Length: 403
Image (cartoon, rainbow, N blue to C red; front, top):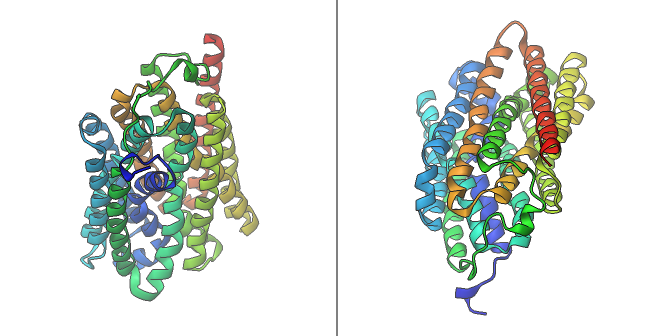
């Protein structure tokens, strides 16, 4: 078989994973070195949280604004935008020019997260056989947690040798190299000769909901928003929590986020496989919300009892549940939305997630800077996941009454 007719294989799956994971790398790297950055720049925890707020705010804006634009652009161009913006963001963060420049880098990193879900979903729908799509969704969505692992381990280790600015520069070079490789790999995988509808009759038999696409998009967007608040309220401040409250070292604090990332990779692949076997999205979302609430209770227990065992249990629950929601949302879209609308639909749902990501770090920063500290923060996180649980229950019951 010639290169021009190459079948989709591990090369394509790898670049899909990289495209989803490269844009958040700066955010995870900054989070893992948070204590160092706060002390180096002389900023408060709330100001540090503003970095994530700017990042995810730009991502939410970009996903909402550029969905139709993404539908009209070729896949290779969108991949170049994703990797190019990610490289530019980390390159700017490598400049030792103060807090404002770092805010600019965070914003560019956010815009880089405006396109990955839409373009990778479309590549799956147009270049990958139907029987592989949902399973591959779980793998490619785990790119975010692979990024969390690399950023949480790599940035602190590099920062110990060449500083956090140097670590950012290494990330920029990595993004540029992988971007070139991604375009080369995609160029040899053709579109399917006989394109399949995004929601064929055989797929509809295992559909997560009999509702209209409009309701599905709205429900997924709302769940992604509420869950996103809890996810990044936890993710962004997890290393700082371990360092400040449980006396972890900087590297050990970064390992808490790394472990969550490792668990998140396995969880997303696992949840994706369950979706590929026909499990309904509302049931999985309800399960994930309940487990995430238990994880929040674990963080609160660790804070109150100074227990490292409770912390690690909470980290495992967080990685397995809250970090697995994205794959369920994207798989539900692949089941229900036509290819022609995949970019805009993915953009709307992603905008909901990133909207939550925007609120979470700022809210958590305000709470931990208040007299209530991390105690108030974790109680709020638990409440957020209980709201997700209630929403999951509503979707399960609605599906049953309509079936």
